[in-house]
Image (tube, rainbow, N blue to C red; front, top):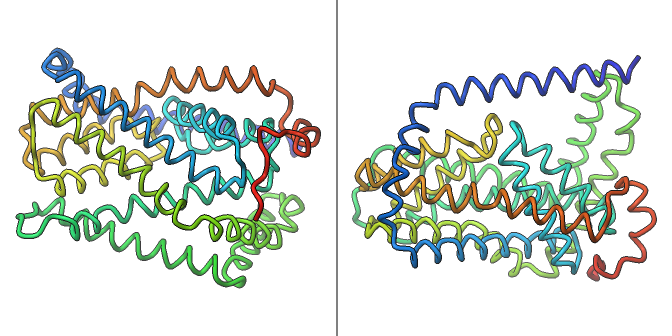
Length: 354
């Protein structure tokens, strides 16, 4: 009976997500059509700059893999890379795909031989690190190069909101890493909330598990602090360079700091879990923000389309190939049973020393 109620809740949640995605895409359809109608103008792009944009997107992924290798405490580039590419592709095709993508990466890494506890905490830690970094980008833009440049009101609000959110998230993360009490309180509150839906027994030891996982992450990041910081910055920095290359491919040279503010806003819009990968939200937001940064509306539409082709659509087939390669190497066994048989013997997913 309880299993049937759980499945009913899952179906209801999925139906609700699909409805939200459908309504959102319907409301954003005019903006999407305007962006995609600029397809013929893609012929005006300089192919060399476009190839450089693809290169920077690849380096952005490599930086994220380096961060996740630290978070997962593993040496395996193959396991981390294939699982991240596959989960990124899942995020782009599933409404509310972040949760499903995390579950996909979790299963792939556990099949590769990584301990489930390290994977679960590592996914959360790498997400928190990259989210904090993108929230810091507006402040970096202000410090790095705006100077005497007149900042449009909309982009100025982006800088203020991003800086405030970054301060809050940094304070919360520091409290969780430095003291036991805040994290223990989160575990107790989560356990109590699970009790309201009859699942308290599954989270009975959650506060203690959170502290153990936090300690493992603290050891991992403290052993490679600068690599972790540079990897988190590189995840978004190279993505931003890809956008600049797309603009250069159209012979456009807007103020880089203003483009960084527009990029930071679009990246945050991409985290909205209503549509797959922020589809519609990013297109409408980035095109409008590039106009505020000094790009003409027509060029902003072409640049947005080209950037999304490189950063959104191209990773889809790459992610499918990555999933197939990982499936060939590690098989499709159940993650739990696979972890119990391979976690101690897989040299490809060897655990880094603390």
